[in-house]
Image (cartoon, rainbow, N blue to C red; front, side, top):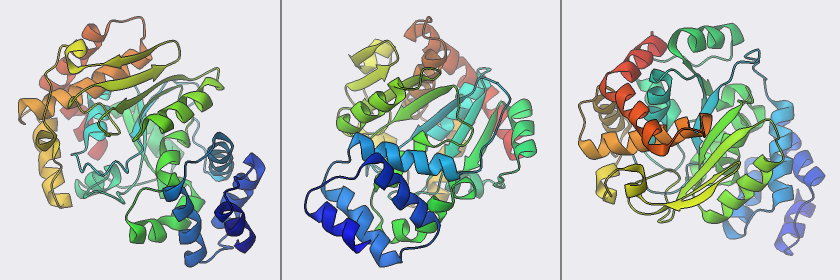
Amino acid sequence: MKGILKKLCDHESLSRAEANGILVNISNNEYNDAQIAAFVTVYLMRAITVDELSGFRDALLDLCILVDFEGQDTIDMCGTGGDGKNTFNISTLASFVVAGAGYKVAKHGNSSVSSACGSSDVLKHFGYEFTNEVDTLKKQLDQANICFMHAPLFHPAMKSVGPVRKQLGMKTFFNMLGPMVNPSKPSHQFVGVFSRELARLYQYIFQKETNKQYCVVHSLDGYDEISLTGKFQLKGNHEEFVMTPADLTLKTLKAEQLFGGDTVEEAASIFKSVIQAEARDAQHEVVIANAGVAIHCIHPEKSFADCIAEAKTSLLSKAALDKFKKLIS
């Protein structure tokens, strides 16, 4: 690791093979916590390259416990996290809305490292039991239209660096990787990223996957989701837009309307009110926006207005709540 750190400190970058090898070594516990912390900190100070990101991703997918849903079309809805905005669990709620609209969601997630409550934290609060048993996940997908894969159960390298990430409390390149390494390799991917540069990297990598339908979003004021607080960028297989909330027939929101609370309990309370369709209009609309664009990712031939309408019906009719209850039970 000393040689690697010297190379990076000399402003050199890693090849795809080198990046792959380092992640393999991390998963084999060949580095101590101080070395891992120093390594990930490098990428807080400089941009990651396509080769580095691709190599890290290759290693995690090669090492992970794969999940085969036997040809079913599924979508993952996962943000990178690390935007520092401490919003409520928008992408997780939007996943249940998409499931309630009749689509299969294979969600990949983790505990939070930079906000009060990540997707794993909120589901655990409601009694969901994490599993990597494929038959159980298939049953959940069949009965609830959604299953949840807690990243550390599938990715030994991620599990190895978990304590270091938690102690750092900042975004690292593992945030960048999370949505890229879903162990079920879903056919569709709706990803929120925390920067325009990362959106470009994601698009470049996803373009090489000819069998994947993808949509990468980034709000220009720094959110790793469609925040409705201003303009957002959308990059898809055959489309690229800068859009406004009005383009989705929705209102522009203020940052304070998206606040996620300071504790898991506060975040869970917001989650419960939204999934029960009893929250404030602003909280409903931001979830509907993300779910609607995810539905557009699945059916790009549909208009954004029609997809938003599907999402709204799913939430307000409590179809999304029904899927949530079935998953938890």
